[in-house]
Image (cartoon, helix red, strand yellow):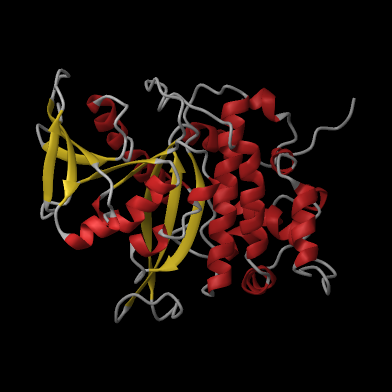
Length: 369
């Protein structure tokens, strides 16, 4: 009977390792390396994420007590000084490329979150999250006088529950500035994007429309509009359903098409929300429900901050920070893929805790699940 490898080894085998080796060669990352190759770095950093390590010392000690198991992983002994240097020097672009290569494997995943919708369109939530940093330790992450931060601008697939685009910026960059870099031409035509009022930019909304996608966003209170047509209202909690146009010349120039306005009273909060969309086919209630799905990206941000290591960092350089963030996102994709492929009934948090407990054991992963 062939010997079973550790759970950590099995996780690595789920990665597109041939593509990874190509990225390593592309950046000549292992050109002068004798003892600690980029693959070893990936192994150690995945170990740190799965075990929830808070420091380089914790990684070093944890691997040291594994004895021969560490050697079987091909990493041997790991000193914190060596790992610190490597995280600072090896281009994080390698791990960013690996994330997007692994994403191709995960793009057909689905979950129950958006199963109540009858439409088949891809459903996305676009938003950003801020990770605060101490400016004296991270001087490259400029934000305020004594405060640093980085922002992760994320296009989150609500159906698959995975981020399909992550763009990093410093804390000064606004959401709409980065939203203009979203690859709208790469999304399946007819995709639906829900966004909050921070993304109200009529040129950006018209760009979404021109790419034949749907947007759902709340209307700003100071927007100057004129009603063109009232649609009949029959659905519960729908107050208004209208065809509208902008009044001010600047707004008309940026978005020359008609839009649809929907006023809706939320059953739980009793608040009244006003949405605009370029979609005239879906019901008003469906448009309101689509906007509610925007909170899925907020839940994703909360999850990764609480359960992955992206708030405390093993190094202070931008390269070290982004290496850690991209490997954390890779680990999230691995968990998502395992949960989907094994039809695991528990939460992704429960799955991550199970894997963390048995990470260095030599047992078949499927038996644990």
